[in-house]
Image (cartoon, rainbow, N blue to C red; front, side):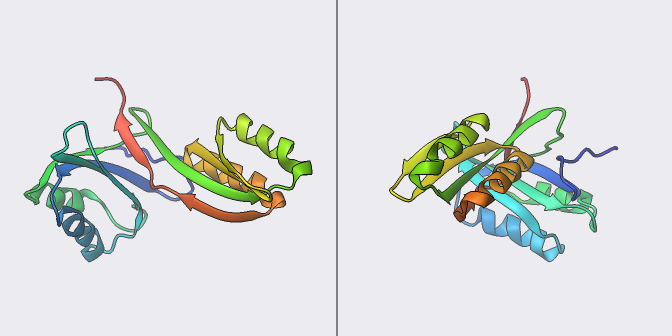
Length: 168
């Protein structure tokens, strides 16, 4: 099987699992990765359309470790209902970033224009700063953060990647 990775220099693999929405499931799953020596690059969890089921999206670096054994062990966990590898050509993935930058009045129009160019939103404006919300691929978020550096980045918060398959 040929694996396709999300467009970064690291070999990242995105797994999406539906699990029972009960206490302890996340601990068991993250422990399984830790015992196998995987560093979890990002982890996002939230309930689905069914409040009894959560979707967990895990991004791992597969450069040094094959993932097949971890996938097999995940399937054995009682509370794991389904696991999917999220391939770039058959799925959609997004991450979210909130970034606060210095924004003196003379620079605000420039910053607003850059936020709009990235299809983002300004979600807060104060006398000296702006908070922007950008979503998309990791490379898009990185590019926007790089463009904000000259203005003076005050704070950045990023979510983990979430993904779902295309179509049916």
